[in-house]
Image (cartoon, rainbow, N blue to C red; front, side, top):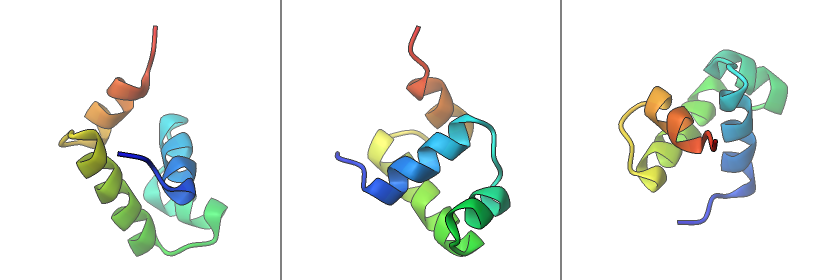
Length: 60
């Protein structure tokens, strides 16, 4: 599934280790909205956790 622009923004910030609160501040959105985007990312990528999501994004 394709990611939205905002999901891509959230994912990029997750990959550099930012917390939901930090992402919310950086993107000027609420913590709840970040949580919703992370949930959508997990669902679209077929993973159960943020760590699994991040591990699947790393390419060697």
